[in-house]
Length: 319
Ligand code: 13P
Ligand code: SF4
Image 1 (spheres, rainbow, N blue to C red):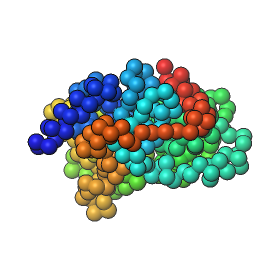
Image 2: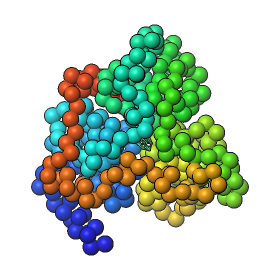
Image 3: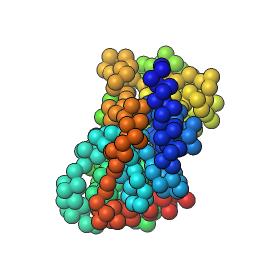
Image 4: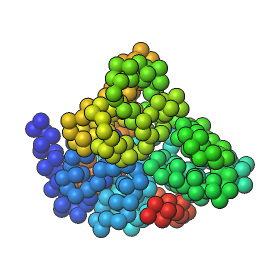
């Protein structure tokens, strides 16, 4: 506890000295989320993290999350210094969509509007017409479908399928998945619901279709936290990374949050519902990064200039 307190104090001092601001995702260590809150930073979903980083006056952003979040910040603000506690923190969706294979896929379907999820590399975004996050993907595809556009979607197959079902759009789907959300199990969820008949089920759309079908609310991390606050229920079953429970409990004190089952035997398993790459962010490497200025995020400027267009398009659509 002492080391934690010391590290937190040190991080606060370094942030001030360097005029730096923390931007953290809900799946990161609760200590990092609290630090971001306490120091005027931001704790949020991918869309709000991007928006906050772009709008903030600080010249140094420290992004606690995974690589694509740091890259998005850099693409939106090439003049800023973007640091991350660990540059190796990636995402199975990003890994599952190599830029060269993705380019070949796009080349094979030139008649389609290319829509990519935020969880991709800068090079993949450079090839896209639109970038979307989980909070706005549905609305953007609805808009494109209304214009009669056919869509090429990458990389998350579950989110793509969900949006396709909801909008009826013609979507060709890349077949990658999130290692965390892909593990949620419908049968076990059904059994858990039986034990908690009054509980509402909150699900992130990277989960399999069978799980999504049992949801009371499907949404981005921010959207399901909001639902937990607003819905008239006292118990919730949550199908997303369990890092979110910290914020949910703060946002809706007195309500009970239960992790959705991931293992085949119906038991919840801690490591299954927690992203191994988000877990690479901690107090120690955050302090070290601020101290040494190491782990700066760089994006090839030519790729960045291409990639920024699809991100700005989403941000303009969102306002
Ligand atoms: P959100 O945009 O909903 O925060 O999702 C990001 C993510 O990586 C979910 O696994
Ligand atoms: Fe990627 Fe899944 Fe981790 Fe989110 S939880 S960063 S989608 S691997």
